[in-house]
Amino acid sequence: MHAPTNMPSLSQLTDAALNGAPNYTRSKASWPALRLRAIPHLAVRSFAALMGLASIAAVSIMGAISMAGYGVAKLLEKVPPVRATYDFLSLTYDRLIDRLGHKILRDQRDTPALRIMLSLTLTTVPIFATQLILGKPRLLLVLAFYLSLTGLKFQRSVRMFSAKHMEAHRLQGYFNDKYDKIFGRYVEFFLGYFYGDLPELGRTVHVRLHHKENGGDDDNATTNGYDRTNPLHFFLYLSDNIWTALGFVPYAYFKARGDEKNRSRMFWGIARYSIYFTAIFLYNWRIGILYVLLPLLSMNFIMAITSWVQHAFCDPAHPEDYFACTVTILDKVNFMNEGYHLCHHHRSSLHWSELPSHQKQILDKMKESGSLVFRDLDFMQLFFELTILRRMHVLADKLVTWHPMTHDQRLTLLANRTKPAKGLLSDTSLNQAPAPTS
Image 1 (cartoon, helix red, strand yellow):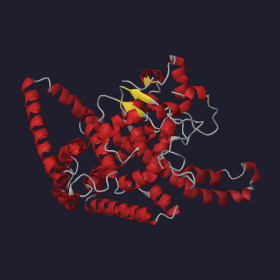
Image 2: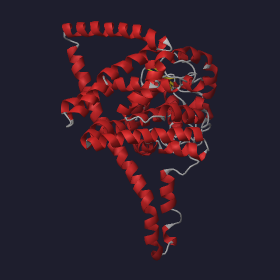
Image 3: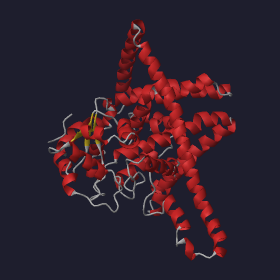
Image 4: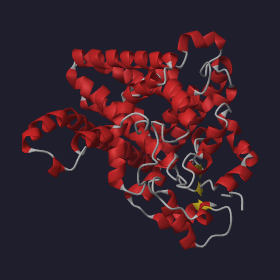
């Protein structure tokens, strides 16, 4: 996520310090002073880059464990007794969740969110508590903790992210009045700590900042100034995102606008997480690194990827048009309809189960704006195809167009919509991306 452009970004600060005038105009006598002034900005940029590298390492470690668990599970499911036992337990668990949901949820349609909340409560929380009691980190507990956070093939991380996302848009969270006083915003304000997700990044930053700016230049999540097909650009974006993950950029945003309510919320969100972070490190610094720092760095990576792809296809002729810049993903696995991201931005108060039907109501506007719709891939696959593998031909095949287009025209459209917005000349005929069908 990127710093709002009406405040100096970290890169702008560095440029200002180092490139205020051509080098040859400076006398040698001024060089020491210039170097001294540049040191703080260089230190900040270096720290961000270090956090970017550390985030890649952290998510790689947790990802390797998640994928290894997935591989083992695929082998075990080939054993008939194991498969039958799993199916029986899963069905029993679903029935339990359904009955429990009728008693404690405000809206029964949120049963999928309840399932992930309960699963994390029964696995992640006791593992973490056990580690605190034992003191010295145990390898098996660490592996179990990471697997409990990510799930198999990162499925649990994705579901947790969606559950927290949708909770942020609720005035009172998921639970009915009887249980709201006990659990409140259970995902963001309790389970989020285990993922390294600061309090208020959902309710305050996502809702009060991101949905206000809609991916525009003043949005902390804007990607408009980056080439979304360039891995180095993503690394810079990832590095800058640490200041959002730590809450500093959103805090500065609200402070600059005199928004005292949300500035105060961010302050206390940062303070609460800082107390948690410090307390664990004081108790045992090894536990702090393994159970607090690595999940924080991993969450920084996940947040950056999500923001990078959800608004990756900006129309350079109309960078402020969130209809053009917000992508829609049609996939058979679409937990809590996260893929209907444009519909969500258009009516963020809608329940997630209503988003597919809402898309039918805004198809004309989507066509007019040239909204991009992809089928048969998820956001993680979109990131890898777009930025890591840079296989635009694959994305062109999965693009659902608004009018007949050749393969080359699709490629040109995608290339035009993924470059930095500033200074580009746009072929408007290519930015008019029959109604989406999967």
